[in-house]
Length: 270
Image 1 (cartoon, rainbow, N blue to C red):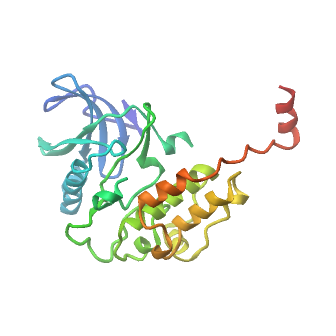
Image 2: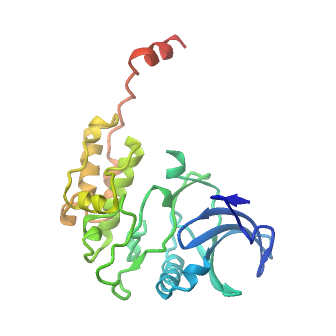
Image 3: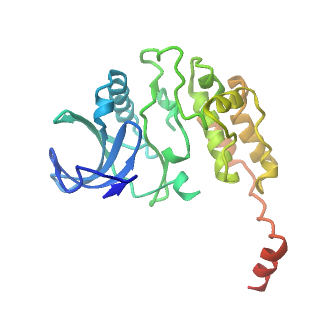
């Protein structure tokens, strides 16, 4: 298979006890494969690239991803089975979940972990109806070693103001990213755009664009998104359980407005 113009050397070959079938995704430091284990189980293998293996910090983050993911026993969090090495390739075996990500179509907090990189492409909409969070490559265990100072962790489109300022984070940083993700789902666009520096400044200083001007949404939903994306984390909901309760209590959204002009006339003729 070719992905991004590159032919992958592992497709159709054995990788230890696995047969590599396909490439599921490719990131900056790792490639995720569809693989068949020796017992016939189909799994996902996340394998570090040689460039990433050569960097100690990346290896440590990858091992931390394994440690955090394996202790998260929740139906909405991807399950990790094994962390190992094969011919100088470091890999993580995970369950393979059929489905698509939110990004394709457009609960971590209570376990003492902060994802630090929550965004639409890291939420999988499984075929069985679950929304599954995955890719804990930048996750941080609250009870673990302090992260390196002066580093900005996370995608600049979705990270919290405290992450943009390289400040200590807690679970409320992920709530901000959840708010940005909800903004993307209902509006079809990210809250802010620009170069990396512009985005970091916007998360810290710019007001959240008015969702009412971008989508047909209720006032309570807009209020929730704006609370989630509050610049001061003390103004956000206290935890994910509170957010879940607020989401359950939201009123039904209004029906979409009838398109105007030619599109509206064509739809009414059907």
